[in-house]
Length: 245
Ligand code: URA
Image (tube, rainbow, N blue to C red; front, side, top):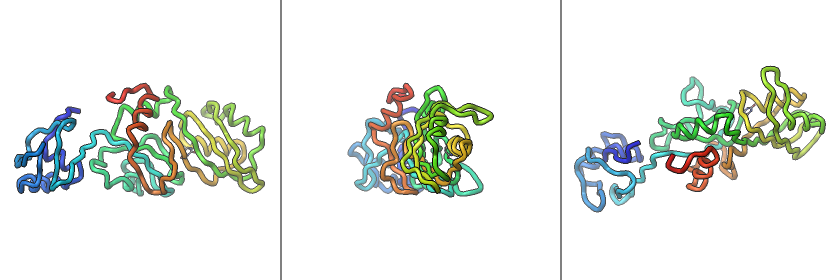
């Protein structure tokens, strides 16, 4: 993207109102650009080197948006659907309509969902070549036998494909239900559920707790947060992208 954009667009896309509303703010003299009052909404602003303020508040235009959401159960991972989508949970982010989720979590799966407007990064993170690790907390029916844990770790045949090696850690093994973590480096449709179903332990609850270097941490269900600069550069370098692409 060109680093120069119109003043009215910059303000609208930084959350100061619609294009029409911000034009009014500019015309009224509320907008200061590099210390000077500017009344022309069409002037071009270099987003990397210009200081813009609206009634004393800095307008921070964020070109590339990177957030993680703690997805609640009941939301569809898609930008459009007749049911509630995860996008409703990030709709207060300026330019949220340009965002999309990277990868999919089932409607009843909770946890870490990476959302961005960076198409190249999203493409790489979901491409099998990069083998991005994803870790899930899982509650299953019954007890996972050591033999089945080994089978899951080695890779199992699901009929249409054989899973790549996984890493299953048992947290609590009980007769009725058990708790585990599984890390996989691929992301086929319903993969974790199908893997446990195959060894006779259907999944009762599934939550993604990490995606590449991104950790869910203490983020509350239904909430999102912006990634730190460090998280973004680590994520990019994990798929061989430099910070400035
Ligand atoms: N595996 C599944 O079965 N479901 C998910 O939502 C994610 C991984």
